[in-house]
Image (tube, rainbow, N blue to C red; front, side, top):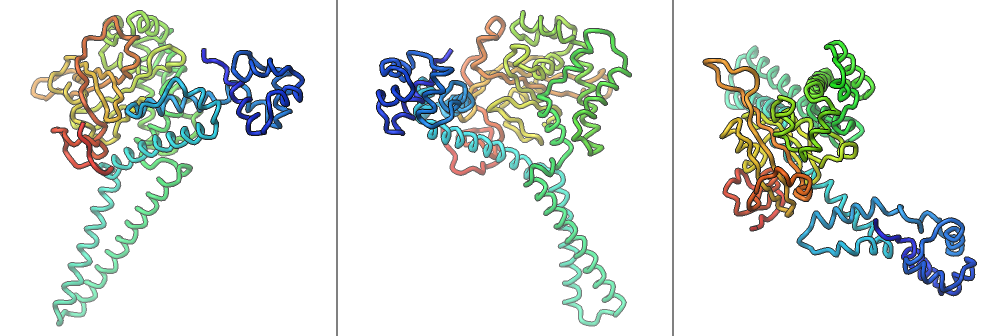
Length: 451
């Protein structure tokens, strides 16, 4: 447990008020020696003494008490971990927050802003590259423009056009201009909607992501299914109730995606009952192979159950998950801190997710390092979907489980020797590695760096 910072805050507030220890002690009704011990965090302070000191300093007692800076300190620790090369003095973070709360608040705010902007850039890069609506809209606008130019060129180059044909060409220009205007207006409306977070999310896939984030990817009502036999009617009832209680699902296509996800979640819960699953997971140190073997399921099922657990309730390490088809299209995603997954593919080709397709049914484990020096354990496998049939190629999906390397102590009994870290990125468009032989397109964030 960290030491109290109340004394540090009191000392800084006293100095700002230009009071001596003796003057503050007299106003608070305590001895100067006692105040000295408090200011050096050698004596706890609370109750009447804390209130008396706060009144003497003319500040809220809450600004001096412990706990007020827990979120700020957490952000500072996260910022230090996000930039390990800077060499921030992690041991002094709590002292910084106590002595200079304003500076600590600013550093934490700047870190949160940078983190959010990086996530936004990743999402925008993903969207601009692969958004089907944008591609279709731009293709349609180019078709309208081509038709207008072709027709206008005819009118300009040919002088003796028959009146009927001339009227027809004018009608074409008029109609194509209207279509072009409508397409441009649709794009403006689309981007306005994206700029306003209150206006909702543009695509059904992103609305599904929003739904899962609101529920933290965990549904206790469905987890309880495996504890007793459940019929299809009961599953359907619970799925409908979860969606109705959410109250933010209006798009029919989004409803279809959410229903499919929840039904699949329910099947996993029935195959791996929550209580038994947690016991096996903890006993095996969250080994997906042991979990799958114990319950007679696929590794993909074990991956999903591990990734969709609430670490606060199960003591499991936070895990990210992406499942993709052979075309690289993401089918399921659960990001983990500092490791995001593009929605529309085009992710780093060095991920074990894609290497797994080369050897279906063979698990792959690797130590991965992002450009920010964050390290992760990547576990992946490609599995055939459905029953194989003669004359038809197998439909393969690959899944990759991502775990922070700092969590490796929870996995030591079964985790193999991962060797040297493999440098990877999120997607080429935002990856700064200049010496990567797997790069498929230039990055958009400025100069590349060698590592």
